[in-house]
Each structure stands twice: as structure tokens, then as C-alpha cells.
Image 1: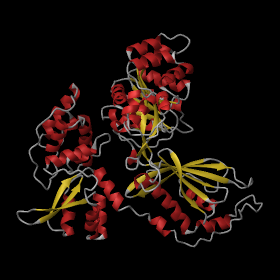
Image 2 (image 1 turned 180 degrees about the vertical axis):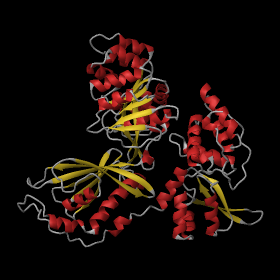
Image 3 (image 1 turned 90 degrees about the vertical axis):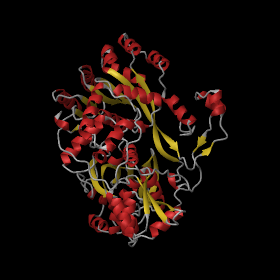
Image 4 (image 1 turned 45 degrees about the vertical axis):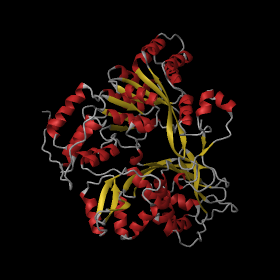
Amino acid sequence: MPDYLSFEYEDAADPLDPTPLPEEKAARQPDQAEQELIDLIFERFGHDRVIKALIVNTDISAYKIQEAIHALQKRGSDEALWRVLTEIPGVNRESIFSEAASVYAFKHEKIEPGRPDHDFVELMMETVGEEQRDEMVSMRLLPFEHTLDFETGSGRIVFVTHDPSRPEVSKLLHSLDVGRFELRYAPEPAIKHVLDELFPQKNEFLERMSEGSQAFDLGTSYEQEVSEVDEDALEAEISRSKLLNLFEATLVEAVRQGVSDVHIFPNPNRQVEILFRLDGRLKRWHVEDKVHPEAFLAVVKDNAINVDRFEREKAQDGYIQRQVDGTLIRFRVSTLPIASANAELRAESIVIRILDDRKVLTDITKLGMLDVALERFEKAIRLPYGMIILTGPTGSGKSTTLVAALHQVINPEVNVLTVEDPVEYIIKGVRQIKLNHKLDNEGAMRAILRHDPDIVMVGEMRDRETAELAIKLANTGHLTFSTLHTNDAPSAISRLYKMGIEPFLLAYAINMVVAQRLIREVCPKCKSVEHDVDEVMLRSMGFSDSDIEETTFYKAGTGSGCTNCNNSGFKGRRAICETLYFSREIRNMIAESGDEIDEDKILKQALKEGMLTLQDSARELVKMGVTSIDEM
């Protein structure tokens, strides 16, 4: 038996006896290597009914279970293996919790409009203490309904949670003294949505901002001819608790709203503007006129590591770490000198990027790709060698897609290396190289060649040297991921050719080029039907007459009242992709190219083979009711 399975393990005791497994059904077909691993897992963990059910009834990979075994071995704890599996990147947590609930005979409930009744939930939550209510929210434990047994006349309270077999859940319910109760399963995201809607978290820092409104005179009004800030007055201003509360409140609110970036800068009226970037759009969150901009910017810089508060004439980069709602969040800080109405006054802009590991996608099915694109993408990344290139402008989600792809191929038996500038998210099982003034892109790539890699991710191919090294890796038996800035998939081939890469190398090194953009999704709760559609415009966008007749076109909700999307009309973004898979015909076209890559010829062949362009993908989302015509 292999070493990685040869250790003692006992399943953690559960409060309920497991029931027999449901009838076995066929899931996806594993290859021979994975089947051998499955046989070993069955041999060693056949007593673990949940693990067996997951292998038989779901698409969870045996390699992910192997990762969980390694993690459990390192911990040396008596946790149930399937619970450790829920923490492994790239697994579908809800399918694990759902299968475990079935194994342990918990009923499944569906949360939908009217179920549970919100008045009932609020009434039940009011009967318990604040500390216990906080515990219930933290555990995702939701009062669901009151049932009555007509034969006995006795009633019971039904609670739902995503992991009903946890002993601490039953212990908490017994402490509530609610009488008879029953635990059932419901998906965690649905439970969280109800709890967030009924019991929104308070921002204590916003509540503290009640200090006096008088600001100290820094000698920086636009009416005065001054060349520098009064540092003593600035120090006095910074010491005010209001500034710190505003800063901390901004970070907390940004994390809770799912913001990607926070912009802080002084406006012409000498007010502090705070903007949030949500779903790709900047939106004003707060304008503060009771503090001096210099003082607030100084507080931000004071709280950032590697940023000098007194340096106002050059760009700086730093970072911040905070615990927000029990999770460690990292913030990347960028400061930049900007012009002001007073030419002699040194103003600054600050942008804070929120790095929340909880938002990292590890499941490629959640990227939003259409079925055709997803099937081809998964086929390309499963090949043992070759290159996958992501193209698109900054902010198009290339890094998100690359990280999700990496999570599909990470396992303990391969050496995965990445070259990033900067390293934003820490990826378990990956050795991530951070570029600096002593180690540039080319130097890192050359070092990787001597570091026995199996899989390599290069943040961006910026020059000929980096591109040549990446192509060399792909041509020498390594799976390689990288990005380029081009408008579509075929033009990525031309870009590399113009960098000096020979056509025959491009033809046989690349597995796929994916051009990607992000498109906003209309809010499902407040979207409305678009009755007045311009059919001429729709036809010019590729809609057929039957498409126009059969499609219900939606637009973003207007007016106010939808808390689900913060009255924006949009909720979330989704990738639209152009997946150019390198078939034999396309490889031959590229290899036979002369002085120029014929992009049109490649595009026609790719379309013939079933590729969807970016516009095709967007059009499909409109037909599905996911987005609006305006977003195309």
C-alpha cells in the first residue's frame, strides 16, 4: 500500500447513527490511475460511509480526497475525513454537505420565497439571547417552521443548517430551551442569504463616528497661498478617533459589500471622496466633509505596512491586514501623487485592493463559461503538457480563471510554480515566486527551468524572452499557463509571432487561447422585461428572427427598493469567453504560415469547429435572461 494511505485513522464519532447508503448510481467515469486510487481509498476507508457515498454518487475527484487525507494526516486530529474534504480547494462544498446529510438520514429542505416565514424566524430569534443569536448566525442555523403531530398533539421546532450532524449544533439547540426540535439540511448559501437579509451585520466603526465635527486648521484652504501642510496641526487632526473609525468602517463595509477596490482622494471642494468598485463599476460610497483630506490620507498610510506617511511626492505600495467578521483579509495599498486646485499643494490618491481568499474561485464550473467553452477549456487543462493562454484587458478576470484552472491540476505528485507580480492570493500546494528589483520576469523563468517544474503559471508574457521561455517549457513536457493583452483569441497568435516566436513552435506548443471579458448580470430580484426592443439592432448583433421571437429580453431594474443589488440593477459578473482550441487543422494552418499569421483564416476554421466568439457568448447570456442587451 502506498505511503500516503498508510496511516491510522478513525472516523470521528457522529451524534446520529448512519443509515444505509442510497442506491449506487453512476457518476463520471474515472481514468485508470484515478480508479486505482479509488480502490485504495475504498480498501482503507470503506467504513467511512460519507466518503464512499461521495465517490459513488458525486463527481468529486479521488485526488481531492487524497489531498484531504494528507491534510488530516498533518493535523493529527480525529476529524471526519469528509469534513476535512470540504476545506480542500476546488471541491463542491454543498455536494459534500448534502451527501453527508443524506447518509445520516437528515431530511432536506428547500429555502424559497415564503419558506421559511420571515416573521417566524424573527420571532424565534427574539426569544434567545444576543450571544446565542450570534452563535446561530455564525453556525448558519436557521429556525424554519413549527410542525404539529396531529396524532399526539405535540409540536416541534424545525431548524435547518448546512451541516446538521455537527455535535455543537445539537448542543446549542438544547441550550436554547425551545422544547422539542428537529434538525434538517438546507444549502449554506440559501441560509446565509436569509440571515443576512433579516439580521444584517452592524458596522461598529460607523456607529462610533459621532465625535464633534470641527476639524483642525491645517493651513491648506484654497484661499491661502501655502506650499506645505502644517505638520503639527496634521498630527492633532490624525489623533481624532473619527478618522480612524472612518478608515476602519470603510474597510469593513468594502469587504461586506464584495467590493474589489476602494478609491480615496480629495475632491476640488476639499472633501474626502470614497468610491467602491463593485461589479466593475465605480460608485460613490461616502463623501466626508468633516475631516481634512490630508489627515485622512495620512491615517490610511499610517495603517499600511511599507508606506511612509511623510512621503507625498512619489508612488508607494504597501499592504494592510485586518480580521473582518472572523476572517483574515489582506488589502493592497497603492498611493499616487495627483494635481490639486492649488498647484503648490501636494495631493494624493489612494487605491486599496481587497484580497479576500473566500472569493477565490476554485471550481471552474462557477466561472460562468457556457457548456461548449467549459468543455473545451477543461479538455485543454487536462492535457499533460502544452500552453493555455488567457487574453483580455486588465480587469477581465484572467487571473481568476487561471487560479481556478490551477486548482483543477494541483495534486501532491506535481511541482506547481507561478511567477507573479504581485502575488495576490496564496494558493495551497503551489510555490509562488514574487518578482522584485533583484528578480525580474526573465530571471525567474530561467530559474524555474532548473527547478524541476511540472506545471508553471507565468503572470504575463511581456517580452520576447519571457515568451520564448514559456514556449520552451510547453514544448518540453510542462503544462504552462500565461496571459496576454489582446482583443480576441486569434490575435494572440499574431502577437506572439510578432514577438519573434516561430510559427511551428506556436502551432505545437499551445493547446488553447481563451479571450475573456466580464459582463454584468441583471439582478434576478428586480430585473424587468424589456418590451421596447430595437429589432434592427438585435439582428445586427447576430440575433435571428426566431431568437427575437422566442427570447424574453430583460433590463436592469430601475428605481429603488432592491436591497439585493444595492439599487444598482445588477448583481455579480460573469465571464464571456472565446475558446480557441488548437485542433490538428488549426495547428497545420499556423505551422504553414509564411510572413504573417492569417487571423481571419484561423477564426473561420475555429467557428467551423464550433467556437463561440465573445459576442456569441454574450448573446447566449441575453437569451438565457442573465444579462441585458445594453451589456453586450
